[in-house]
Amino acid sequence: MAIRRAETERPDELIIPDELSAILDRTSALAGQYHIASLGPLLEACRGLLSRDSVLEVAVFGRFKAGKSSFLNALAGAEILPVGVLPVTSVITRLRYGPRPEAEVRFLSGASTKIKPEEVGRFISEAENPRNHKQVMAVELRLPSLAPYLGLEFIDTPGLGSVHHHNTQVSLDWLPYAGAVLVVISVDNPLAEDDAAFIEELRRYTPRLVILLTKADRLDELELAEVREFARRELERRFKADFLIYPFSSRLGTAKADQDQAREWKEALDRELLQPLAAGSAWENRRLLYHKMETLLQAAGGYLEVALRASTKSDAELAGLRAYILEENNSFDVLADELQLLTQRARSRTYSLFEETLQARTEAVESLLTDRLRQQLPRWKMNLWRLTRAYEEWLKINMTEELNGISLDHQDVFLSPLRAVEKSVSRLLETFRDRLAWRIEERLGVKIPQVDHGVKVSEPGRPDVSFGRAFDSHLDNLWFLIPMGLFRSFFHRHFLRQLRWEVEKNLSRLATQWSDSVTQAITDLETRAKEYVRSQIATVENILDRKVSGTSDLSQALKDLSGMKAKLAALSAADPEMKRERRENAVGSGQIMGTGV
Image (tube, rainbow, N blue to C red; front, side, top):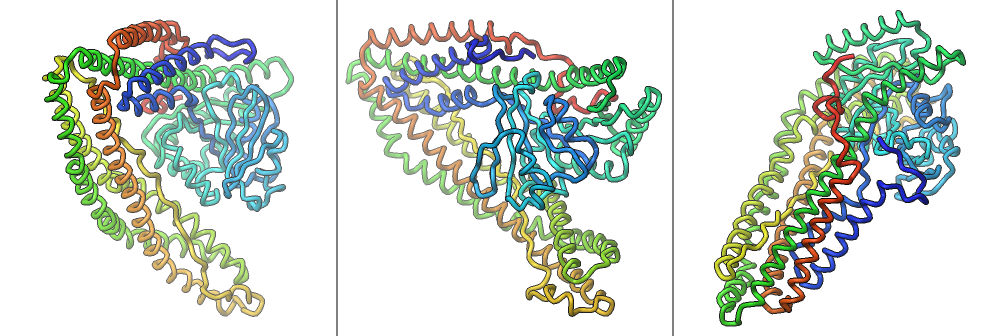
């Protein structure tokens, strides 16, 4: 992967996006000059692709003291993340390339502040931010030393089940789309039961798992081979799949043999995993951008061809087409009512469908959590106040885990109303678009561009979970008056009874939140569909109203577009990312687990 030179040197990789931006600017100016409203969504999509960082996220998970922070520090070439005897707080830390060292702290309140990279420990270490009392949501680091990994963003997280609720949700939102998930395991205790359970939990959210065996310098060559083989067999036995397994160490001696070994491990990780990921992200993003821009230029040319043909017709020759457009305009309310009826039916069915689906899980979730709590309660030998806090924390972790799992298990059900409406709306818009194109071709002898309506919405993310206090009153504040030897069993029964109410409450809340999210997405879909129809009608109206006039100007505009098409083709041919072939062993969503050790 080519590394950018200093910004002042105008590296070749930056020239091509500048040229692409110039093409978009000129096309946008033509769309405005000739009132081609229909190109708006396509222009917006191209702008978004051009400005979007072609970055893939690499999530790094691991148990406390597994060497996760040391691994990231080794990649960064500096002791940026705190390493010590205390674990970090539940704060997600993002690391990526930047032309200068800088860091930003984002808070739960929505505020943010710039800090020096060496100050990040104040916000992510348990020693300086105990229990995340500073209410930090995430810390973002940009470092020049990460230039070899341009195109990747490393995400350091304490992992699922051990983070505060807000970060658990953030993790689950991006985890299925991560380019890879590195599970850091120390060779001191390879693939312990906690590791296996942790991997099993992660597999619920993404299949893209890679194992990183850290502290590999503590073993000799034969011992390391045995550990790798043991991990491979255990993973295959448990999960019936092969995993990529890489040894790594950030602490090697000064002997040349040790340095060579460290370099060999790091180069293997770079060559086989990280560099293919980085190259693939940039290539895919640029490929999509060229495709969209080609479509944009073709569509712009098509509309100008229609305008050019209309400019040669008399008013009498255009009268029939004007009458049709007026009819379509007047019947817009009918189409809008049809869209509204379609979406209203879907919205009305969401909650009942979701509630029925989730209620069917009540008994199973309650039984599972009850069994877990019965096993846990005898281990909590503490006063009432500490017992209550332990129960509330246990409930938060376990309920969140189960309900997030349920959301994943039934995601197809929850999204089915939105997907059904999306298909119906697409058919309705395609019928309108084809009818309009046929009329124009009938009258002008030229086809209107078949631009994709692009009426889609992002699928809603998984909702959050809420937990109440263990006691309605503040009884636990009187812990010093309550002899737990006599009353411990009473409080245990109280916690067990409360479980059913918590399960029912949160399943009902989950159904409401999914319903709210999906119905809002359906409403957004309806709004965008109406905007598409309006823009299509407005574009043709502008053409027929002679706002698009001047045969010579239109001919020149078409020549400009032809030149831009040739320029785009030349840029695509010269683009370093487009010339770089996708490697056969590129790690993608279907390949990350397939080649063994």
